[in-house]
Image 1: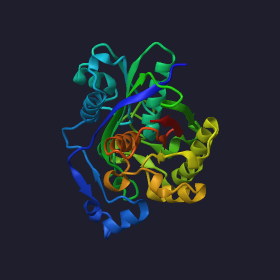
Image 2: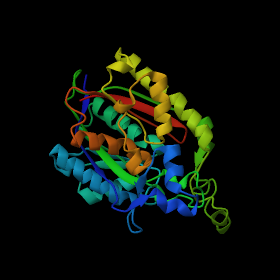
Image 3: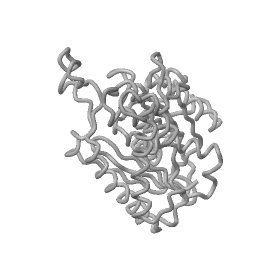
Image 4: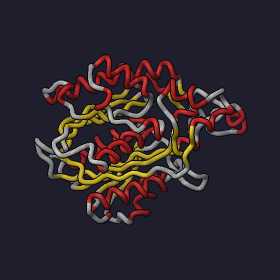
Length: 327
């Protein structure tokens, strides 16, 4: 059987750092208020002239450099995002042009905060089917472009960024993507949405005035959803592999809220220090979150050869899923 493996990763964070104190206009002592509820100290926002494809392009180039290959070696580029440069064409085609991947076909997928793990699933299956050898999966979002900065319960949570991973054939039972698990529940679609952003409710002067062009989230219901599906992902993938959570080297969760991680750590008895996080420095970067943490910990040597890592995402749709990867 063909097994895919990660041969390189890359990331990009904008240089514009936004500390919690930026939100003092919304709430008194914003730093303490935000940190005590989320674990976030700061996040990065793209500049006005930076788009999702700009960040994704830098991440893609860094991944190519890490893999030691030219863009011409790519068969496919899958960009996971819910903040594309525009509704059409795809952000993936823009990235393809920017990096000169002339032999690749490119497209976008949108599973909101689960987009990168969905992109990895697609890349893994394209390789397993034998038609393609090398596929780049990207998670990129610029939520600063769609946030309602009058909403104290959502706008301090998010940051911008992009991460990429290149998968190639050549893995084995001891290296590469071992097991995957993807799910969605469309009944929960109203919980995370931008109401006026498409054909259901096109943008008008009235929807702009009603602030329906901005991100909305039912925070309490989403927290309950997340704390239900995170154990589901862990337990299902470990059962597929015939192991227990204690056998995992690390878990890379979607970076949403440190309270979720605290809860899951206690519930699963998996040590919190083995959850790899950048939440305090980056906030919730949506599709980019898992990709950013993966790249950071591959580059700093935390994830080493032989480590067994579970990468997971959950988000709007509702969507969730994970991959068990042997490095």
